[in-house]
Image 1 (cartoon, rainbow, N blue to C red):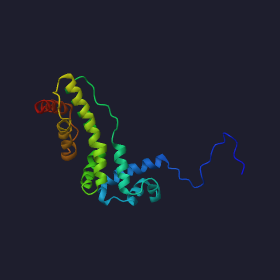
Image 2: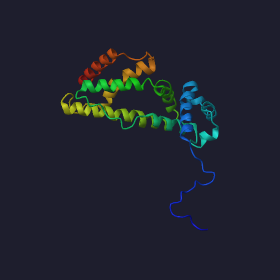
Image 3: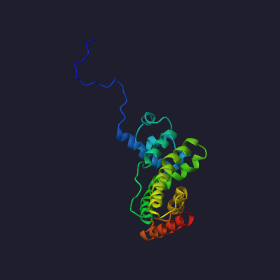
Image 4: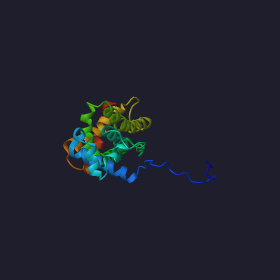
Length: 205
């Protein structure tokens, strides 16, 4: 067989699957809706496909199971490489973190999906590992940078605990927005929480 002339575009192999991005996004959106509606245990590939308006094969071309689908979705949701705030003060950095966290925790993934996945994490080590890697470790890294900067400025002593800082800064907000579901916090509430968190960090240091 004579080879094609140089520069001739290659044709895709006959029958090759082309994964359309709009279909992938429709499936991901359907997963959010299905998880929020029925939870992980009752979620099915059939239900996801029906919500997305596609066939089951479209889902299985992309993910081998509902677990792999959810883990991929959770990883995609996590914001990686988010720079730590650099306002020049511990108070300003904590306030900026609370502002970002207040928006993130009102996202449907946080308010409806993540609590269900935390329950499932007790039964599925893969979920537990992904939740830790995508959510906890990312947040811990950002808070560690804030604490390190505060230590360098002399606002906190050497050895200040970033894990305790994460608990003090994000913990109360998570309780209010995800557990109690008390509505969007006001600017005054975030200001008060900032003052309390900074005072707590200095008391624990």
